[in-house]
Image (cartoon, rainbow over all chains, first blue to last red; front, side, top):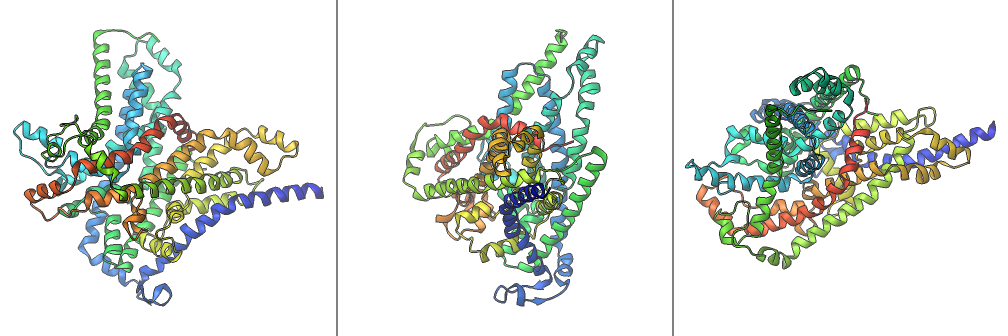
Length: 301
Length: 294
């Protein structure tokens, strides 16, 4: 008996050693910066450091809510994020449904490999290429002027910017986002389709009554999980395609925090806005995971 | 299944094929445009004559890059960063995922530890405190710093935990009866069975670190420390065109080296382009097995 306990004990010891490096990494890089949140309640002075800077209570937050910028960046963030959320489910599902109707395996695989491609390219590069393609002297404007239309500086027009931000993100990710739906499609029993074919169901009837209901759980799940990201409009993307001309519609929380914090060195204000975003975002994600657990029996692990 | 080959059916099928081909083309054309510019003569590229085929084919842009050491310095910063990130990430995650995939009876604190990891995935102190902490650690201009500064990749860890949970218990139990210890089971039974998930995470790690520009920008003080994407970001956006007229923008773009920038962009895409198609079957199983648990 004593020996068995000992073996169990040593196994648990080995387990602890195994998780130790990961815990260390998490504590040093993820946890320690969380204490920096105190800066949001300080008039932070880099010379004095975090321990000796003066505490100002909620002053940064009061100041923040008076700024016109701040309501604007929250609006921009939410509008862009909601647009992405909806279309990043809808377009991949439609794509998966279309691909599912193709029987030629080689064609299918070619299309899949190609549409995965943009996901793996960084926004620095995609942004650079897109700015060129839609630039005043790029191919899109070349076509426009060939038809006699006026050249448009697409990414410099504030009324167009959100549409372009949402559109380019959906375009870049639809292939990769379709992976889960394509996997779910393979899980639908072929016998259902055979039975439907015998009953004389048309292609559309099969799609509507068999394929879509088969996909429904995963569509619901992905939508719920995406809801938690409503304050994440995508820093990497926006930072690489926006410019001063479109700040009014395109500046999001993360880009604003970066500019105000690390360019203008207003550490406390930027940290306060960042903290607000983190807290609200955390609550939203927790809520969406809870809903996903209750409604779709989803477990993270 | 026997399809009815009516005219209508064939027409709809044709429309589907056309839509799919157009979607695939939309993903390829911007990259082809960039490639065409890189092989075009400067004059043609700057006059905006190039579409998807080089005009005045020349290798000059690529020859000019050979003389630019800054590009290669950044290229190798990125290569080193990816290598170090793989060396740190894969063993750390594999080791941690194994005990965390155990039941609570076998490893009591697994739930608490996992929830703390999940909390770290969802909540952060924000950019500014993160930057200050990195600076205090002395992780500025540091390759290891770039490899670890993103924090532990919790999503990948959970992918792996979920994959390990699906490995049949009987395999382990048989080894345990033979007296195998935890380390032996991990290295000789679990790891060999986990190729799809390890390949998936390796791919994600490579892509994340190769594609990052922000951490490289914030945690470097000079061009010679920049990873490739940060270098390219500076290259493309150095000119602030926000206050310029269309004519001035045109002039500025004449001054910058359009074809060489395109060539640099193309070269920077090559490593990822070469890797992902071969790992495709792995990441598809990796994501679907580990990511979505119902």
